[in-house]
Every structure is written in structure tokens, then in C-alpha cells.
Length: 190
View (tube, helix red, strand yellow):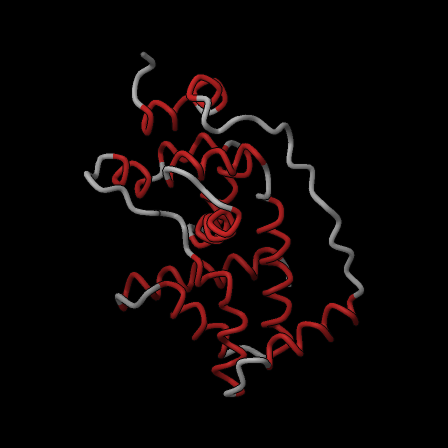
């Protein structure tokens, strides 16, 4: 699937969710379910590529600050949430995770009394599987088709360079690496 087609699907789902009031992931599943199975698999492959590209320490540090901590599983959900935010935000985060200090949801959440896990969107990870289930009525249909698709496309999922690891619990280091997010979420240095 071409990158523009992928982002068109995401943006259409975002618009549909805003218009209908339905959750984004449900609108996305519906939009994918209206496509041929091959396109759903191509969507899943493009999703994985974009998702994997955010598997970096600096992006994880941003998720850690925003979420007040971030496990491996939560980091998967965070990367899905960045994708769900649309192409503009995805590209900004990929270029500079500290730009999340300007994300409206992150700013609103930072000012809330009880912070939630904004931008952590687990269900987006499973939209392609949900679309297959909606089409076939079989919860395992996607995973069977996915194995065949991956085998036929012989795609090598090489490991990504995560960049330099650092201590997310070191506030000074977080302020140095993500100054705007740290100012928003950790406050001024003491």
C-alpha cells in the first residue's frame, strides 16, 4: 500500500470519528472492512513499518513522560496512538519527539488533575484483525491470512536502530533530551 493511501485511510477514519462521535478505532475497522482483504493486509504491513520506525529510545522517553511511565506493551499502544493522530503528528514525532509538547491532547492532559494515558491507543494495533473478523466472522482469519501474506511477500523485518539508551527516571537527562515535554510534564528544574 502506498504511503499516501495509508494516510488517507487514517485521515478518513479521523474525520469519520469526529463527525459520528464513534471511537476512532471502530471507524477505522469499518473503513478497512469495506476494502478488499488484500488491501487490509497491505494496510497492516504499512502500519507495521510506520509503527516499527517509532521504536526508538527518544520516542519511548516521550511516551514515558506523557504516561508517567511506559512499559513495553504501553509503548506499542503509544506508537499506535501517534499513528492515529494522523500524518502530520506522526511526521513531527518521528522527526522530533519533543514536539509532542505542542500536541493538544498532551497539553490538556498535562493540565488535568488526574492524568490519563492520552495517545496510548491499544485498539488501533488490531484494526486490521478487527476488519477481517467483521468480514469473515472468524477471529483467527486475519492471522492465517497474515502468515500467508508475509510468506508470499518475504518481507525481512530487520531490527531498527533505537538510538542511544538513557535513564528515563533521570529528570535532568529528560530535561536535556526532551526540554519542552519535560517542562510541560516535570515542571521547572529544582
